[in-house]
Length: 176
Image (cartoon, rainbow, N blue to C red; front, side, top):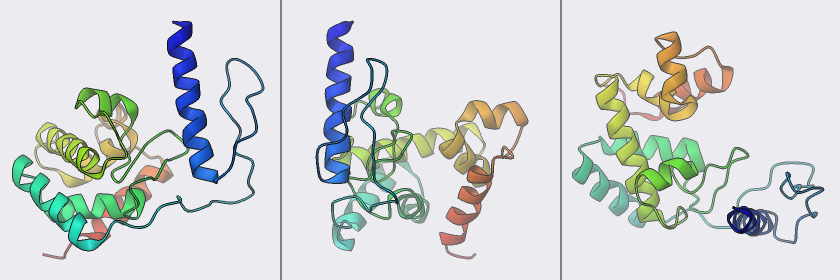
């Protein structure tokens, strides 16, 4: 177990170093990870994926999973702004900001690989759409806050981040 923990610590340290563009302040103890000591948000150190590449990834994944391409694009826009190297403060990674457990669930070996990330995020959207009978609001709430929270309240949880997330993603979808 100690070897596994050290491997995780090294991986996190590399991600933090890549995010801030320099070595991070070392961890204070065994149970902590490196501290990101910059005063404000810094955009991930990679460019937005070009539209032609993103369109192909979204189109392929949409066709394979039967999820509307506009929904996939809206989630990518909200989650990462189209940056494949994005990392959230909670550990979500890549274009669709998939969590490590989701990456494992869908066999993702590199969450920063745009194809693997979009495929896994789209599969998750498909699962959530099926679970919530096509209800996009509940699907998005579960994508953001987790299905357990959505299930426990029987709707969109009254968490400001989640409420705003659902509103923002839906506003990116074409009007019917």
